Image (cartoon, rainbow, N blue to C red):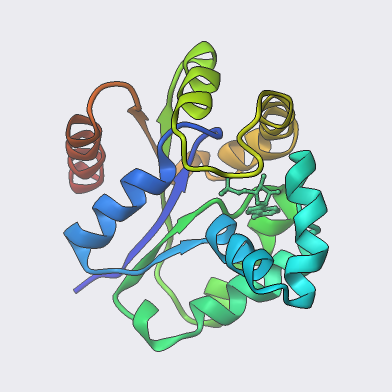
Length: 187
Ligand code: AMP
C-alpha cells in the first residue's frame, strides 16, 4: 500500500488542526503539529519552551534550525511508517527544502499537499472566536501571524505547487473533510 504522506497548509485559522484530526481518524496516521509540540514545550518549561514562548507570543516564527531537527526526529519514529499529516510545518522555504531532503534520506514516497482556502476576513473572525485560550490568539498577535504567513509561508505553497490540491475551507468541518478526502482520493 502506498504511504499517506500529507502536508496540510493554509493560513492561521484555516482549520488545519481540525482537518488534520479528521485525516488521523480516516487514514490511521499520526498528526505532526509543530505548534502543538511547541505549546507542550512551553507548558513543560523545557529549554525549547523557554526559547519559543516569547517568539510565539509575538506571532513570529521559531528559527528554522530549531524546528527542522524536531520534525526530523518525529518523522523517523515508527508510527510514521504508513504516513503522517504535517500541520504547521514547513512554514519557510528552508524548512521545505530540509523536509524534502529528510524524506529522501528516509526513503519515503512523495508528499501530497492540501491547502485550505479561506477568505482573509473570515480568518481573523474565526481565530478570535475559537476560545481555545491560546496566548497568541489576541488580535495584535493574530494580525502579525497572518502577515508572517503571507511573507514567509506563501512561498512554501508555491514550492509544493506540483503536488498541491486546493480545497475550499469554508463550511462545516464534515463538508471540508469530505472535500479534502475526495481531493486526495482523486489524485
Ligand atoms: P500553530 O499552532 O501552527 O498556529 O503555531 C503556533 C506558533 O508556533 C506559530 O505562530 C509560531 O510562532 C510557532 N510555530 C509553529 N510551527 C512552526 C514552524 N514550522 N516554524 C516556526 N515556528 C512555528
